[in-house]
Length: 170
Ligand SMILES: [Fe+2]
Image (cartoon, rainbow, N blue to C red):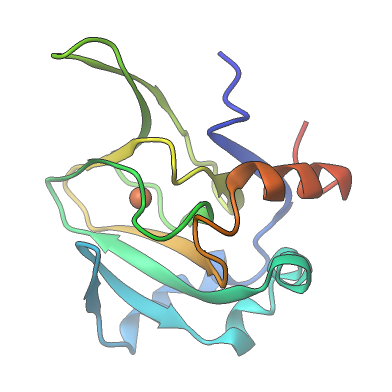
């Protein structure tokens, strides 16, 4: 199945956040945000990632943060309330599944999995139904919020621009 309309990995890997996330989660207060525990990451830190700088120059990033899901939690099927898209990176490999769903019938949802690779950023279509299943350890994901909301900016716009700029994997 072609998953390009759901998610796409970037060529540029993380050069700072992936290696330093443990320091970022240690000194902050977590707040509840759409059912996740989250912390903000200062712009001076996320700007160390050249990819995010490039994308910010074109589309204006409002902020970046880390989302935490508790052990043995399923974040239910949903589309995001505000965000048309995001850029995500899994910060530590844990037993968990990130899934995009397709309504099969009134009882069943079929799905495809986004298998996060270490240090890889993914463009993520938050307006396609998705869900996370997490097992025994807390799960931490780096995530981006753009200044424009889902009415103003969608996944395909950013995908097309990134593709044109040569920022996406094959
Ligand atoms: Fe979501």
